Image (spheres, rainbow, N blue to C red):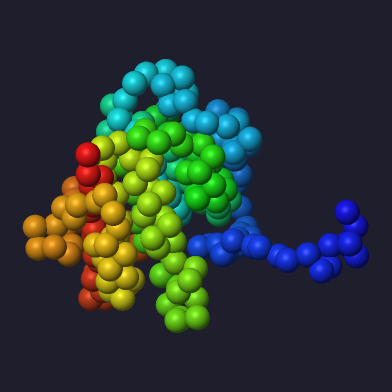
Length: 234
């Protein structure tokens, strides 16, 4: 079909929760991509994720969506070598930074996608296969006209629920209180979840979530951070 034939066809483009941003690569980030991607990179085209074959063992499996520059994911993987982790990030310098850190620290319990996390969940992750899903500091899309881009919505909640094992955990964190309230509103009415907060809203920062430089800077400036934890009901 040529462009003329397609001009009148309806366009159905899914709204993305992220914007692809070009970034300048440091030498270390490029090394991560050049040397680390062949070892640890995953693609949608590889199809369903077989964690036991991929890691050579059966272990608790965590998926982190949007790991940024990868420092928290690297720290979590190093602190819990008995767990396996899969990270998803569209920002290539961040992917390179994580891979470079993995090479530097000889970390082998992480695999990485560089694409849309929703497509990873839909195409590559089996139902009832994840022990945890992590979503730390996603873009809050502050402007009202952009709220439709927020990743936390009823579709996301249901898709994650399908992929979690019974009793599995969805752990989210944000430094933007209106977004924390938005997350809470979505999750409180999402079927099949239980809020793990004893007060029905937030939990204290779990020890397993590393504190980032960004978060420390926010604390010095008096900014709050809100953690939410929900478990999949059996």
